[in-house]
Image 1 (cartoon, rainbow, N blue to C red):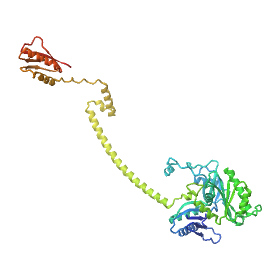
Image 2 (image 1 turned 180 degrees about the vertical axis):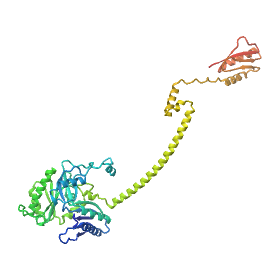
Image 3 (image 1 turned 180 degrees about the horizontal axis):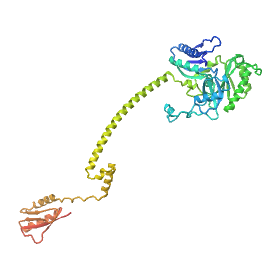
Image 4 (image 1 turned 90 degrees about the vertical axis):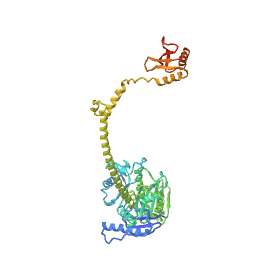
Length: 491
């Protein structure tokens, strides 16, 4: 079973419920002297010492529920939901009310802004947002309810618990706990919850889907804190029902909603249940006769889903306060940033050194490129401020010119001589007397043959075995033993 803590806003009383139980009361003041800052600070430290001692080895409190004594719900119009803007607007609105509105933290009871689906939120986005610019949760122009409560001493108490190693998961007001415990899970139905302490007070709130809409307190005239008037009914149940009718009618006009069901929690609430059922006959009224309504309410609220940063489900400023673990995260983050800064500095030094080497290589490459350009023998290129562009222009101009004709292909002289030798080797008695062969004419061949018939066979063999040279008989120059031929290149 989780550990729960019920505490008053002025730290006058506190009690632990669940796995660790106990009650604590502050030292009563002597006389009418109000406690000073040091006494209040000591009270917070004493309460934290008592809680840590009762918890023992348990170092976690699931829910701290703050009593609503001194808390108020008001209708407020504000430019945005920033804490300083809300506080300044509340001061301007309530400056004529004197001390009836206790100074403290202000929280707007609206749905929390949706998370950024792109994931670009977080600390960096908050740092990039200019000072004075509205955040993601901008106040509605028609206004909304706000909860103001004196939370300074409770914050000191929570800080002292954190210093003693006790972790608090969520902090809420009694109204938040009532809405989380007794309202229906539907987001459309509004449930009115009343926690009745006969002879002391009646706490009420409106809840929807486990979230707080608005809340209030009705003090019993017999408690000594509310002076009875002549027009006030003597019946406490009748008086409470009349006050509820007035408050609910006012908030219905502001919020444009009304309760669809009513839950009355606490023993001895039959008279109040009857008066409420009489005034609202069309709304179902249910009674929960429990001996300790606040303890039961806190137990049911702790079993509800965990409260996130939603002003309707918890006191956001206390639930998300910087804890020791969070401060440790900041210290480690700062150390990581220092290491990152050192790594960036080392990388910067290496990059600076590398850039100096690159600059030296650039100078060397520039000198080499100018030397190569000088070797081209064109002074106009060196006068150009951009050698690359000048060389590209020169290359384009050279490509546009007609390319020079190369030398003719060499004639296959060796192959032709080899072919002649192979042909002549087949005839006995044939001797080559002279061979004159070149790439140009005249090309001549003189053979010595034994007889005319052999000469004819040689001519026929050269004709049947064509090559790159075509051999023909030279006119009027041959004999029976001498054959003279002329050659012409085929290609």
